[in-house]
Amino acid sequence: LISLLLTPVVMTVIVALVNAGTFSGTTVNRLDVIDQDGTASSKQLLAAIRSANPELILCPQDNTAKDVCSLGEAGTLSESAALDRVAKSTSLALLEIPSGYGASLAELKSVTVVFRSSSNFGASQAAEQAVEAALAQVNAAAVASQVGLAAIHSLQGQAQSADQTRQMSGDLYQVALKMEQVQAVQVDYSLSGTPGGKTLGGQLQQGLGQSVPGMGIMFALMNIFTGIAGLIVERQQWTLQRLA
Figure (tube, one colour):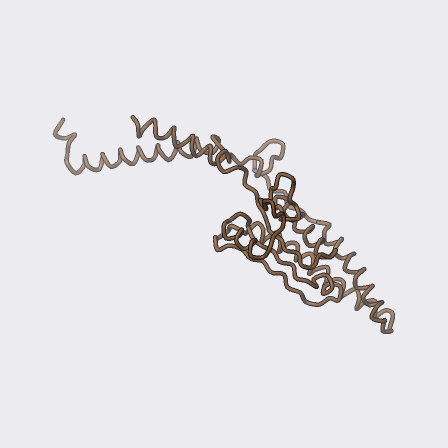
């Protein structure tokens, strides 16, 4: 009776409480950011990351009075502290924007940002995809500004001064970046057959809604397997034949 009735109920309640976040608290997707550039261009990159995944909390930029970034009294992040947070899974990953990022973009030069994550497979995938989506916008805008600048030089038929070239490339980059942020094609993920066009995220079960059917099926299969084992032993020992 304990294994058949009491254990399934206890396990179902425990899994429901843990899955609902009662013990561990609400899951917070933190992405630690060390912005060594601090220019408008780096802020645009961070804004693109937020737009790509609104569930991400950029730390310490998005920290609140409730300390959602778990920074404590320090309120700031050093590289060593951020790497330690990534190793302890306090944050999903660390993004480092180097000094001169904005100047390199203005001059259409190559620049590298550093993304550091833990060794846990898939733990930082959400943050990595958001960063890659934001960088795709930046790279596309940079290419578009180069093409536009070459077209202007070709139409004018004369070389421009360095200041004029820098100004035009910056203006073209900003226009191209705004155009990249306008998503002409969007995908709406939804469950088939659900009324009102409910999305997949709104249908995910948590707490008892997830643990009751899951644990119920598991313990039912455990008892079924035990019964099957009894039937196999009976076939080997001919118990029912002797009883008959």
